[in-house]
Amino acid sequence: MSNHTHIDEHRDDEGAKTGMWIFIFTELLLFGGLFIVYSVYRYLNPAAFHLAAEELDTFIGTANTVILLISSMTIAMSISAIQSQNKKLTLILMGITILLAVAFMVNKYFEWSGKIAHGIYPGSPTLMDASQGEILFFGLYYAMTGLHALHIVIGVAFIAYVMRLVVKDEVQHDNFAILENSGLYWHLVDLIWIFLFPLFYLIT
Image (cartoon, rainbow, N blue to C red):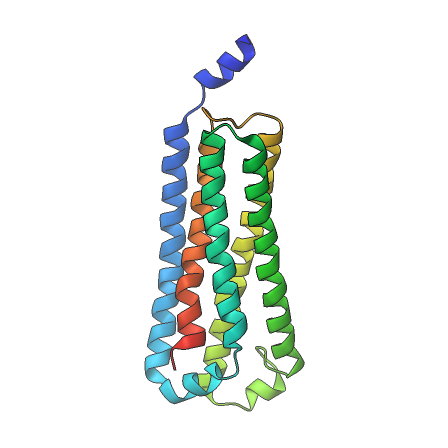
């Protein structure tokens, strides 16, 4: 009991939240810069970007958007569940969030592999024969969606780690800052995709 009290005395929930918000801000700056680069190149190459965008599968992009929106809801619900001292529901909702993330990555794998199978990837002979604008479009597409996919993998690892803490009762109704932080990170992943989806799949 004294050991538990000792740990609580040195816990800095506000500091952890502040650190997460600072991290999120730096991530938004990173992707914000990429969005600006994309916008400039699209302005300079409107016809080529329009032609290249037609190669993308809007259905898969839409499905992945729905998947991430639902996953944001489930991770938020897990925080409400832990506050209600419902450990089982918390774990179920976190597990669903991870499964949805895996579904997103599976969709992205098939989308990327389809493009690669058709010779559409940076440095490919097919793409080298295309216009400069198309080369720029797909370069940005792979770079930005690839970076987003990396954030998905990190987010899954983060949530899985917090699940382990919940199982061990190290995260409870009065000590769930790390669960909130994992939720904030996941909402960031969702927000980034909300911008990526229309930029690459919808704007023509």
